[in-house]
Amino acid sequence: MSSDVHSHEKASKTALMVGAVGVVFGDIGTSPLYTLREAFGEHYGLAANQANVLGILSLVFWAMLLVVTLKYVMIITRADNRGEGGILSLMTVVTRALPIASPLTYSIGILGVLGTAFFFGDAVITPAMTVLSAVEGMKVIAPGLEAYVIPAALVILVILFSCQRFGTEKVGRIFGPVMLVWFFSIALLGLLQIVKNPGILLALNPLYGISFFIENGVGAWLLLGAVVLCVTGGEALYADMGHFGRMPIRNAWMAVVLPSLVLNYFGQGALILENPAATSNPFFSMVPAPLLIPMIVLATLAAVIASQAVISGAFSLARQAIQLGYLPRLQLKHTSAHTIGQIYVPWVNYILFFTVIMLVIGFQDSSSMAAAYGVSVTGSMLIDTILMIILASQGWRLKTPVIWFFGLSFLIIDIALFSANAIKFLHGAWVPVLLGLIVFTIMRTWRHGRDLVRGQINRESLRIEHFIKSVQVDPPVRVPGTAIFMTPSNDYLPPSLLHNLKHNKVLHSQNILLSVETLSVPRAEKEERYSMLDLGSGFYRLNFRYGYMEDPDVPKTLALMKEAGLVLDPMDTTYFASREALIAKDDQDMALWRDKLFLFMSRNATPATEFFGIPGERLVELGTKVVI
Image (cartoon, rainbow, N blue to C red; front, side, top):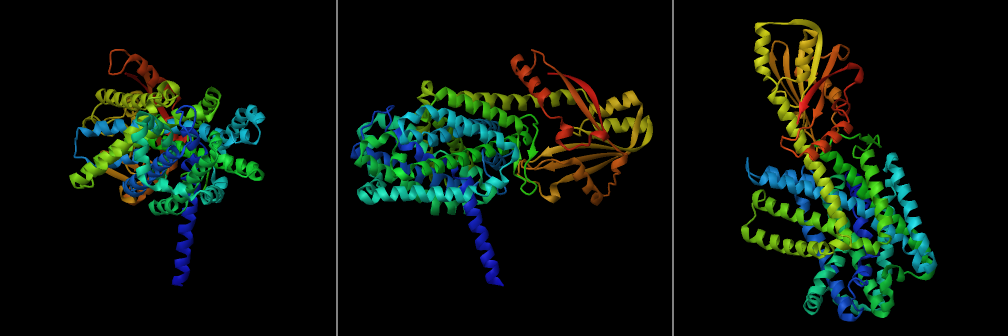
């Protein structure tokens, strides 16, 4: 019996590891398509001699070892938020580690939003870059096929984004096996070349990378803009931790992904030493002619999988940002009855699709897009490092010398990588910077605007305790039934309650002031799901709490209130909500253009009642004017 359990657990761990290979490592797994090609491209004018090849391979190997293996796999994945990872999770973990009212809290919030903005930039560039790189293998078959690269890439991207609304549950089952075939194939291709020239393994020695820097100086620093392409997608190790767990991701990286990537990169290096002309496309130049078409098909599948993973990640991050109050409520569609994480966000999909298509048409080839790709990735990595240092000092309480050593080491690496890409601002790096600024502005404007609205409503309202005392002194007419008043803060009288009493001259026999709170954890525990306080005179203060990875369902949670002694008849319960009519004014805390942006987002946001699952036939909405 115990052997059966052991076998089942082993099979489960293996399945998780295979799943991680398919979802987590698609981006970094397709980086051999373009990394060395860019390093020896015309942008840098680097000769394909032994010193340069060994130097670049050494930089690539140690970048993967230090940035991905040590920083992400070994260190940052320990900073989980109840098993979840990602920039917003890291932000909340760091914030909780700080003392109350710490001056760092605001700055950490800004860094979290900025990191999120960079991730959305990555989510736009990854599909364009990976699909283009894979389809460009057609030019290796025959130069005359170059004219068909852009149309083929556009067709693949149109199909990819059109299929998002159907979800990836069924297709996702083949992600792992396909990527296993991909990694086995690229490892074998590299190994065949290494056997011909085993001396290429000398590049494992970091001295070759150091010598390359000494000999090339500023040129070597600029070349980091291409070297960084080998670690694109490394942050996905942390972002997708909640889906697979720390150990399956770690095992997949150490046992499958890292060895395959190292073998392929070194195989490309061996081929370049043998045939310098292969620098035009070293990856596909390794492939034997009869296998070229199958390899292009496999590379395209791997590129689509890499794109799908980052698009799904954008949907998930958008939901987290909505729940935490950084984005307006958007329509969310669940595409799986079994997997809660499978969601589709139409607005996000449309924006990603339009931007990706514009990038492909605008840049025309993956080499031109390489500079734009690096900035978003290195920006995210730099922010992760800064937050990790704060967490190590405030939360993990590590010794100062340890923090200084590792913190400075990672900062130097990340700043070098980021600056090497940012310096190419006019050559494409402006794209992710612009995208990041747009997303950052949207998120900060929405958060600040909602704070202004809430503050204005509270200033014009009574505290609920004062209202209840007035009701006791001068009781209005009471009617049977239960009224639930949705409010962002149940310390103050909801405008809908005041308007109902003012216009209808009655109160229900049972009145519940209901607020919904999003916690800084992925999922709320059962004991923290709700809290209730009897205020007297038929009034109750009720708080529902959900994690930022959950979909709030108010009626479902209300059914749990029987345990607390609050009995509700669904057919005798009416929900009241305020619909705010917002008016922009140029003498408040936000510039007029930001007020207009906030108003636009508010008008297009999904109503709170729909977002929280309130049944429309039991809902009464009352308008209130708010000047911001």
